[in-house]
Amino acid sequence: DTAVSQTPKYLVTQMGNDKSIKCEQNLGHDTMYWYKQDSKKFLKIMFSYNNKELIINETVPNRFSPKSPDKAHLNLHINSLELGDSAVYFCASSQDLASRDTQYFGPGTRLTVL
Amino acid sequence: GNSVTQMEGPVTLSEEAFLTINCTYTATGYPSLFWYVQYPGEGLQLLLKATKADDKGSNKGFEATYRKETTSFHLEKGSVQVSDSAVYFCALQNSGGSNYKLTFGKGTLLTVNP
Image (cartoon, rainbow over all chains, first blue to last red; front, side):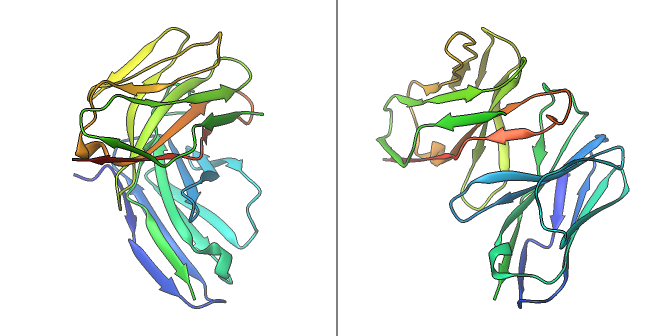
């Protein structure tokens, strides 16, 4: 059983399109995250939700909008895609917001904007 | 704010060599510290963690000790294998306020040759 799953694994699209990436966790966790990994492997948090409530929203363009229909899902919708959005996007989850909680990562979605 | 500095890579070693990857951090309060590993084409996996000063995390022959006096969490392994080739990320996680997030170092690429 996959603990944190993401779809699709690869996404190739044209500039200006709108796309979504889905994430699901079957660990019963309360907190979910989206991270962006650039071409140099640098990882940076984008969003965090706890019990469907937005907790962290880093300086991410408004074109990125997370949606959490329930605690097990956190989807990422991106409007008007730009070349600079090309990256690997990772979803993660943790039991709660405690600093000691381990975050479990999905396999990533490689987004390529042409 | 929080930050993590880890040694620049890439690191290339022969099998059975000793590995050290340095990691230092800046944080307020009492963060938890983590090492994550990313194998080629995969997501991040927790390698080990330590949640308070002087704790030692260990897993798969890797070790790291939480040193508050030197704000360090260096990763070590006595004898590396080819299968250890991956990117290693040091990270810290704080709690309280808007600190519910992992802050990552830039990653260190390790290549182990037979």
